[in-house]
Length: 276
Image 1 (cartoon, one colour):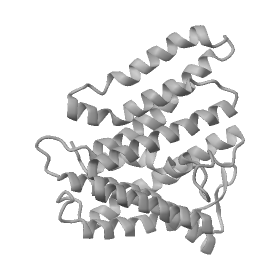
Image 2 (cartoon, helix red, strand yellow; image 1 turned 30 degrees about the vertical axis):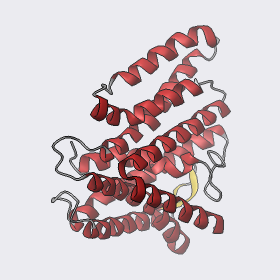
Image 3 (spheres, one colour; image 1 turned 180 degrees about the horizontal axis):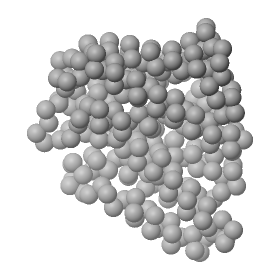
Image 4 (tube, one colour; image 1 turned 135 degrees about the vertical axis):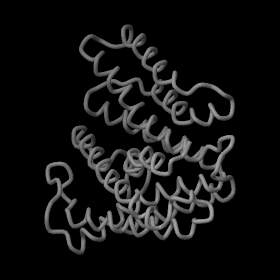
């Protein structure tokens, strides 16, 4: 627990320093690094299952897909062909580099990683990337992205504390035995409260419709999806017979263990804030 607390404090410090000193550029670097490391661990889990995804190809295209909205806004490079291009390249490579027994799995796991990690993380980039004619300032976009991440991650904290205090009924014993319904409810309520308080203090840069009450209501589905994403990662780890996705972060595990709840939260947060 001490290691987890120290790692959490250190990670939030890194995020705060990067955003405070480097603003949008700092956020983009963080998103790219998180996406690449998450995708790397995802492919390692696929290997543990006996599959053979194209790791380096996937991480390269995954990083480009994650940052594609920024490339599009800055250099007018279209974002949509990247996933199709990655699929084409992987399809050509598997004919010569994989055997008939694992060709389907190689293509499927490579592309699924790009969709589940890179394409979903792309929505964090969409949130933080300034656009011409924006009604939200660049700093406002950064705070919106931070709100989404805080709401998603604080659900984990609220669920942990609530589960330890009140947990009685197992939510999904076959997937994640420690999770309880009481913990999940506590986590969602904690996220709603956090989202409302955050929106109150950020009201000067948030879109006008995102009042504290609306923010609390919007936080609920993001928190729920954070729980779902955590269960999805548990399904993947259990299939790979791994407790953690990696050992990158002491007390927490791998980057996938850290970023899992953000993956489903990011696109929902993007649409809830009605960003262009």
